[in-house]
Image (cartoon, rainbow, N blue to C red; front, top):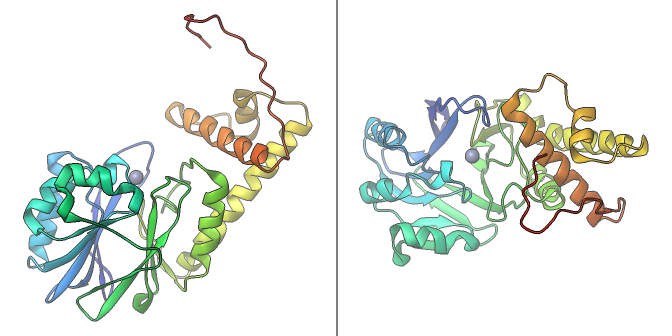
Length: 279
Ligand SMILES: [Zn+2]
């Protein structure tokens, strides 16, 4: 489906509880000339086939580069088979080069530079924006002509993202707000068009700040454990699959607060060497 003059989305409903609203791969440029492919989906053959069918539907344009947003399996899993068909240079964050080189060979992978412009058909270019946080090797892309941000898993269309390093994640969100855009093309969930697309990154930042505030309030009340804090700040009827993710999020928030010197961590549990914990 065409999203803007130079953006086409290939949407897959993968039915995963972790990313409501399915997953997306994007073709960017002019199908009559040359295009970029952003992300390659999971390794399931069916998924790869859908991407390649869509590529056929676009008329098998020359692919100028395959761009990867980050190292998670649901984004790089189809790379080897798609590379076999389109034979385009694979471009990614420098920290991801080694892993991808093991999939397609070292000559095929070229690291992106921060803020590099990658040109393609239709006389457009996407700019690489290094955005660590969800993962250390995360890259978002900006297509200035169409006012589009490809946010990978940094900002999603229908849910909040999981985060490894919250301090860098917040800096990455801040950085994204400086790129003019009104449409968000996320790794998962629906494309978010204007006017909401223009506000989504800020809404995400606000959501995180609010969560941090709730955690500080829980700590102030004397609630100290991750499980207890999670129970305090998240809805009680949270689906089972999401509870673990919520606990991870709380842990990430606490790590950031510790890093900033606003919270102190006191280890209070001791376990016998070799014993399994059953909490
Ligand atoms: Zn993902």
